[in-house]
Amino acid sequence: MASFFRAYSAFLVRRPMAAQCATSVVLFGTGDAIAQQMIEGKGKGHDMTRTARLAFYGGVLFAPPVTKWLQFLGRLNFSTPAKTVIYRTWLDQSIAGPAAVGWFFTAMTFLEGKGVAEVMERLETKYVPTLVRGWAVFGPAQLVNFAIVPPQFRFLFIGGVSLCWNTYLSAIHAQQHVVDEMDIPIY
Image 1 (cartoon, rainbow, N blue to C red):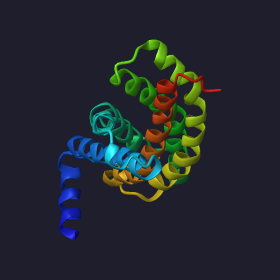
Image 2 (image 1 turned 135 degrees about the horizontal axis):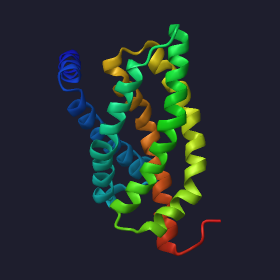
Image 3 (image 1 turned 45 degrees about the vertical axis):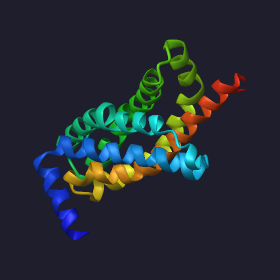
């Protein structure tokens, strides 16, 4: 395990974008697998297409902008270390948080082959509650991340937190599918 960690650490330093995209593929795919198996209890009825879609989203559509965003935040410095952590966290949660939640529901709906009307419906019903829950999770996590985690491991740290979050996102996103399939209004 120690040799894997050393190799991964070297990969993060040498090729941060590739390492973080690969990490995100694994974390998003794993989050969906956990959601399907442990929360939804699908067993042998596991939807591999859904898992692949989430993994694709994580590695191709999510990781590149988040990697650049974290690099940008890492370059911001203020008059004290405490102010730097607070401002980085505030910027992350006020800009990236809302954008990431909207991007998730938009991209996933389009990846499922649905149209703008379905995107708007998902955003109207799921955006605000998901964003508020995201702030409760990622606000404190980013405070810790920016305060004590070395820069090359920030994506990995937040990725670990994201594993639980991705499981949650996958599960709530799937709830819409059940509603869609049953043709029952949400409220």
